[in-house]
Image (cartoon, rainbow, N blue to C red; front, side, top):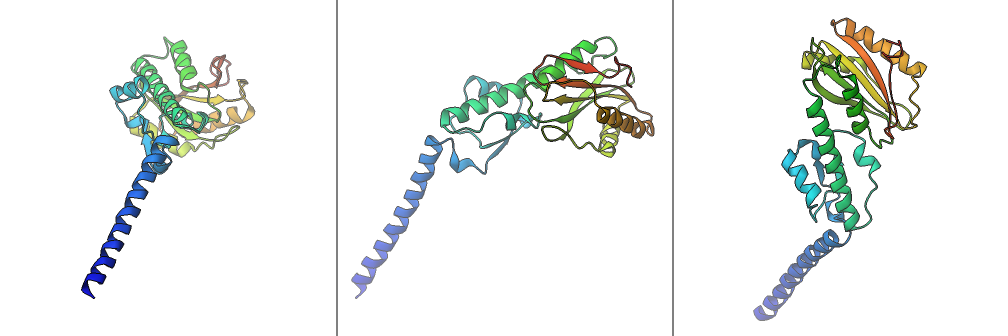
Length: 239
């Protein structure tokens, strides 16, 4: 019977439409109620946002937030707690954006300044950069022939107690920036800033690698992540 077949077809179409609507409603409910579980595959790289975008996130955190954040400081998204509610997700987003903004402002202030005359400014920058870090990482400050800052870059991220550093990668990045010298830095989440034997060995290895391309290592700074202290290996006579 054609009418019966038409009726069955319409019922099936209505079922499909209803199922699609249910899925859409469920996705919307998840987004609004549990910190965007439907956005678990979404990643936002805060390092690629301009200053106005970061300021907008800080001043008025959006209701739709990414589940995964990437920042200039690779560890920041790890030590900001994972959200359990929409409110916590928005707060996490705003805190990460604020850290990215503060780091960028501090780096801009440092860029172009000669470190020979202002080593304290580099220490202040590193306090901001590594603030609260729960894992070790490794930062290189690239300098020109007058020891003015060209750029600051985090090259390696590690665990709570160590970072695997590859001198070959440092050489490649030094040549990329056409740097004449570098300053190295890494945090100690334990807040113990005494240079270890491993720190001394690593510094010597990097110095030897960079000497092959006529680039000097002028310092290696170790930073307490609670901001209380920064140790300069150069000031200790360990360079």
